[in-house]
Image 1 (cartoon, helix red, strand yellow):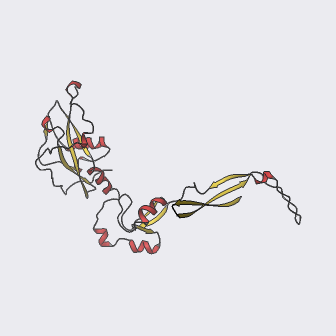
Image 2 (cartoon, one colour):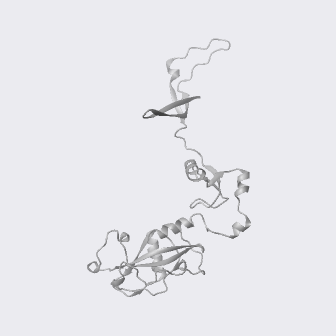
Image 3 (tube, one colour):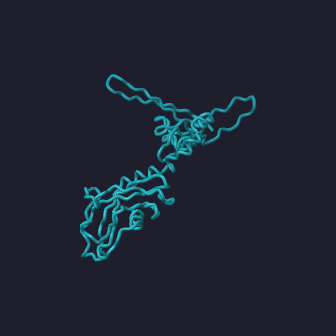
Length: 256
């Protein structure tokens, strides 16, 4: 097996100034035809042309680099909390954690330095690394709540649960806080009007979810015309007060 270290130099010209960048890559090669052995104390045989034909064994430029372990200095959304040791891809660690100063290299000294104290552990600010990301996703959408146009109904938490499931979110009914005012229908005056409800995640984080009523009929002739990208259009408030208070007695949800 033969290791051949190749060095290439790139020149980027810009006016009178030049930028010189050196790139080092390693290729591991193997002879395709092994040369014959020679006797002791004899002159080695001369290599033929076929002995200089190599097969590529490994190219380190395309080799997958192993994950890096770092210690977080603070809470990072979608990664972890202060003092957590995380193992992630090198380019993400360098660009998103080390360079902004959000993490440091894993050493016994850094683990002890950035570990949480008892006071910090008792004052929980985030239930998980992904809870705040879930809050941001819920607050960035406008949920379409499809209600029957032909039969009477009263809006309940399970309607919001079913609409969230269609949007890709799984949530228990006890995690959903509806407005105090009763919303009932069918009422075409409420079509595409907006109201807010509160989604509680892991008994801690709360997200304000924007919802809009849309009437639907099983009879194709009675259906309302579809409005393209209706969530981008401005909407009137459905209720006089769009702000609702979240309750503190909520069971543990399974929002993901």
